[in-house]
Image 1 (cartoon, helix red, strand yellow):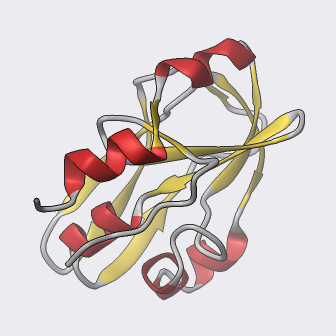
Image 2 (cartoon, rainbow, N blue to C red):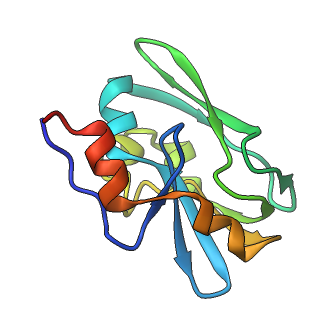
Length: 129
């Protein structure tokens, strides 16, 4: 299966995305990562106000196959979490790039996003040739 990724998203090697929206960044996991996990049954996210550090675990996602840590693609403060994903983890599975976002961050260094892969590079990494 080939995956399409929004052009304005930036991706970490660990399959999390950062979607810049002005002064905030929407964080989630890619459709590829969701596909690899299978049926998602539980999502664990940090509290609002938590300071995240790029590359460090911020929570986990549990599927029928495994429990996987998620890693922050950038550093910043958690401004909001997507409560609907906590209440209904299938939201993440059904629409990871739109309704299934995980949290909004206020970046501590807006330039960190430039160190992530663009959508084309990430797509070339995860899509079969």
